Image: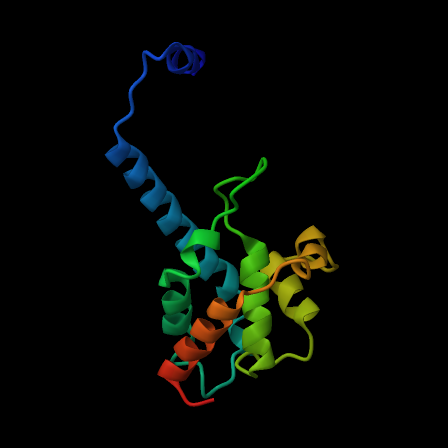
Length: 148
C-alpha cells in the first residue's frame, strides 16, 4: 500500500477513470444492499396492506437519482459507508405515513441498530432532512405503489 501511495504522489500511478466509476458503482450497489438489510429488521412493523410492496418501494427509493448521491457518507472517516442518517429520515417519513406502524422512531431505530438505547445516529438524525425535491419525489414513489 505504501508503494502505491508513493507512486501516486510522484505521478507514476495512473488509474483509468472507468475503473474509478466502476468502483463507485460497486460501492453504491453495496450500500443499497446494506440499506435493504438494515431496514429489513423492521419488516414486522410494516402495515399489512403494505407488506407486498415494501421491498420494492425501498428498491425504488434507493435507486432514485435524487437519493443515490446521499446514500453514501461523503466525508470523514466513514466516507463511502451507508448513510444511516438518510435511511433513518426516510424510515421516519414512512412511519409518519403509517406504512411502518410504530408510535415513535426510536423504537424502529433501536430495532434497526440492534441496540437498546439511543445512539449517535439517532441523536444526529434530526440535523438531516430531505430537500423539497426529495420530499416530492418520495411522495410520488409511495403513491406509485399504493394510494395513501
